[in-house]
Amino acid sequence: MSILLGFAARHQNAKDPDVKNFNRLARLDEYLKLPENEVVERILSKKAELGKRLIILGHHYQRPRIARLSDFVGDSFGLSEKAAKAGGDFIVFCGVRFMAESAAILCQPHQKVLHPDPDAGCPMADMANMDQVNAAWKALENWTGSKKIPVTYMNSTAELKAFCGQRDGIVCTSSNAAKAFDWAFSRGEKIFFFPDEHLGRNTAKKMGITGADVVVWDPAKTNGGLSQDEVKRARVILWAGFCPVHMEFKLKDIQHVRHFYPGCKVVVHPECEKEVVDAADASGSTEFIVKYVAELPDGETVFVGTEVNLITRLAQDNPRKKVFKLQRSLCLTMYQINLANLAYTLDHLDELEPVELSPSVKAGAKTALDRMLQLV
Ligand code: 13P
Ligand code: SF4
Image (tube, rainbow, N blue to C red; front, side, top):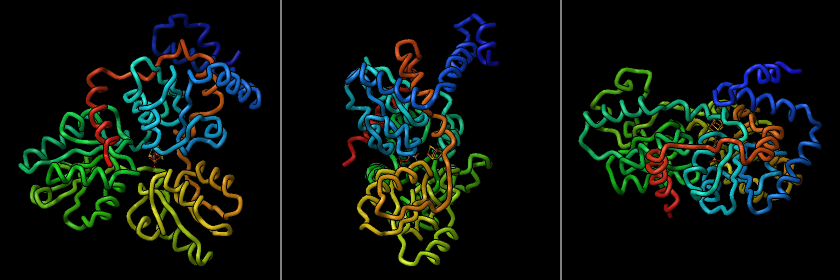
């Protein structure tokens, strides 16, 4: 008997959250021991049995096997649109927690959203919490009377989305950040953007906003490390958060590949630092990157600066092009979703707990997400 099964057998109180989690892990242990083809068979037969009652949504960073078993694969924006329109009873979300939460906020009340690994969060989303953002907001309110619009990146907790919804703010993704900034500037004089400093800076630059007009609020510093004058002058106040996966890509990587592969193309995600985005041929959301590579002429060489599982799939799907990674950078929490926990989730759809949020958080976050979905 494995250690996990032993633990579960000794602890019978199924209501204790720790015990529940161990029971889940113990049963998952059995799935992890099954041969891969058997696990795939189980997933396929469950999909066939449930038909339209089930939709599996997968983010582009999922392992290729998971992406190919998903009914829809997309970027954060496409997935949120799909969740808002999906039919059926069960939405199984293969991605990280903020994505599953957004699906739970946007889906219909009778639908159940399940996340194959409820522990799979996004390190960047965890870089801004409600207390920190509240404290920053209060300080900014004290320092300047100008109207500020809070804009949160999709990669944030549902509470922060609700914070924006309740304060005339909005959610954005990497595919509509400039539209969201335009929307915000038509309603206020300053934008307070969290948690990704780099997407914020790259978006501001796209709109011609640079220099002292952009400042960074660092929650680890007193008063965010800013003076009242700096805040008064700024048009965009960014949060000092970042994606560890995209921080791996450096300007020297682009200089290196351009030197050894003259004429190659470089496409990166806008969560990369500004100097990386500036040096690339193009930047955009994961869906943008997929289309960019698909539209390149045959024979082209392209280096991609984003999560490695997407690049692996891009290379498989574009055999007539030379698709390379700029660096190998893996999103560990996206990788927590695997065939075993997907199969386990599908086999226990009725008994597993859905992704759940309090009604007030859900309502506030929905307001901010709906504003994003209405952007044209
Ligand atoms: P996309 O919205 O571009 O898919 O990005 C999500 C993400 O987590 C990137 O790191
Ligand atoms: Fe979060 Fe970065 Fe992973 Fe995207 S790639 S989910 S931003 S840690």
